[in-house]
Image 1 (cartoon, rainbow, N blue to C red):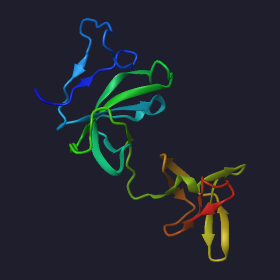
Image 2 (cartoon, helix red, strand yellow):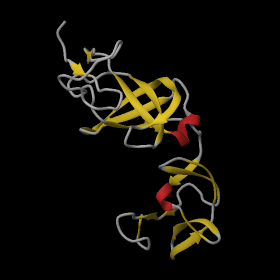
Image 3 (tube, rainbow, N blue to C red):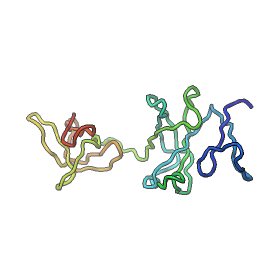
Image 4 (spheres, rainbow, N blue to C red):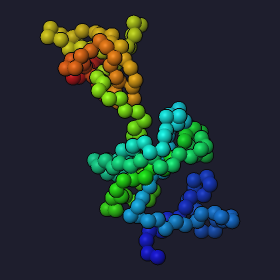
Length: 190
């Protein structure tokens, strides 16, 4: 059968070499179907409880980050394990079925970054997480007004890595300043 041949890593994640010992039922070689690919993903243990089969996933290949691909969580492994022999970080492994394989760009073993949609909140006001800071009085945002800027302490709801839901204290159309992480904490941009 024609195709791309992949030499599997050993149980420690090391590349196999000529002369290495092989055991009964060791997977030595793979001949993948490049027309129907899946993504093997890792999620930190802290987020594993929010995973469900069928959740929507968007991912970008590290080598081609300008293009986004979609998929669904098809398998969630039952065991939390160390990321590798050298990295003790606990992770949950899962498999993502990719909706449409890009045979021109996707290759076995390529690295990617993905986002799993765990919850969808409809019709909610949200702001970028970088707009929220905190002090002794709690979480606040800097609101742009007609006469300058004003510190406001809204009530916040659920949040993810990018957005924070606003329960009260802000209205649609309000302009909040986003802290610029590339400069100092005192620098802001709209």
